[in-house]
Amino acid sequence: MSSRRHFGTLTRRAAATGRRALKDCRGSTAIEYSVIIMLVFLAIVISVRNFAQESGRVYEEVSSALADA
Image (cartoon, rainbow, N blue to C red; front, side):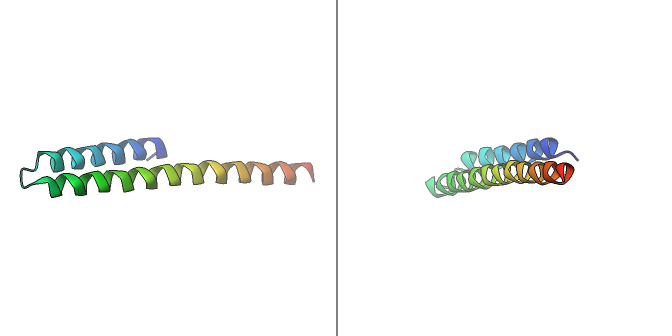
């Protein structure tokens, strides 16, 4: 599975979880927890994406250096 497709699947699952939590009528606690979970999920996704981009840049630099040597 490609990373873009995997990211889309994770995003859809997180959105579905958030919608289910928002429909919960047991009180505001469920809504608060769902907001916290969504923020944590967003932070993780952004961190992983930035790490992947930076890692790709480093590998490209190493590859260029080896090709020049």
